Image (cartoon, rainbow, N blue to C red; front, side, top):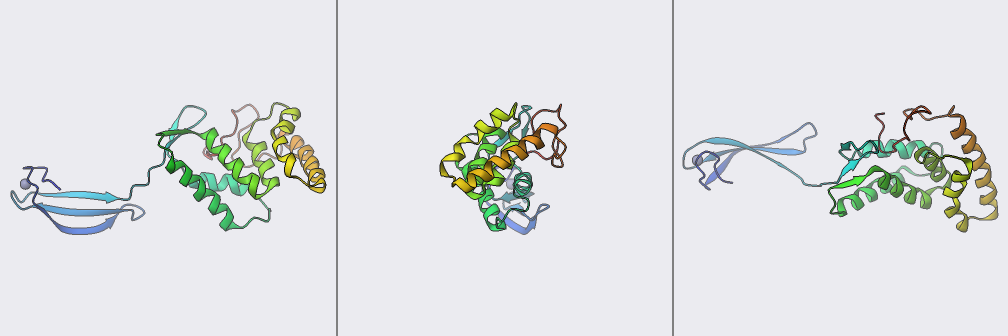
Length: 196
Ligand SMILES: [Zn+2]
């Protein structure tokens, strides 16, 4: 580490401690052996995720807590283990970290969640889809879940149709909107964003 005062490369660490609100940094005091100037450096682990582009065009940092609460809402009273939910979140974060793109659309993250829920719990999948996609009509809602049909048993299929009717009624009158979701006139709910 070069000295910022004289440019000498011969500096030594005189103090080192954890810092930051979540102790995610190391703060070091260094001293230049040439001019004896003291300066501070911060070290932190690099785990860089792309910025999330919301539907409004706003860029925000990825927030796994928002993702978690969206998943919890979809999985409300469903027999899905907390570990499996955390696994979904970790998996999505890994996929995000693996992209070289500096930005990702929030819709794309929503699709990743849908893919994950598809393999986890079909009821949660439909709930998330009904919250996340703003269905213009019952028909578009039906179309959106058609991709599920192939791997459903006849019993599950009947269950599914009942759910479609329930969810259609729910999304139509908006009476059972989950907390934090927009009013009927507002833009579609962004599953990665609890702040609206
Ligand atoms: Zn110096």
